[in-house]
Length: 114
Length: 109
Image (cartoon, rainbow over all chains, first blue to last red; front, side, top):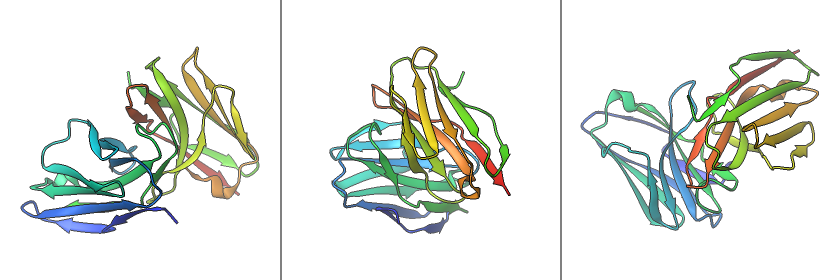
């Protein structure tokens, strides 16, 4: 079982909705990540938080808004998404920043935008 | 040219076969290297970190060649359960991690 927990596992939302994805880890990791994965493609990095501060934003559109309330939690707020944003959203954490130590992934939230 | 490139798949091998995957990277400042495994509709899971001296874990051997800028993964005595997509990950010293496109392995009875 993964030690990174993501909720919800599945989400269907309309283009005018506002929703949030949640991620939690209790391994004491200080780096947390959001990735987006489309079918048959590798994960694409969206955001990196290191010591609760946003350290990397891979030019993600502002309709995706990350938030790190504390060292164990990472949220991704969604607003006015497009159908092409439908994908698997993966959260990951690692002991140190920048994925240069072992990273643990959550099971993901499968998002469908209608 | 992509920052990280992997052998195009799929690889279809019989049980017991030895199979090798390569992954090349373009940024010479790359610092950390990993192999992840991803099963269908599941999250990626770390298979091995890749060290300069090479490392082995049971049937799996990973190697790094900094001069030629590639990493490799060797699987010996393939099992049916090894069927998955194998992703290499390369992290630069600036902290950016890039996944390769993945190589799909199918081990058949």
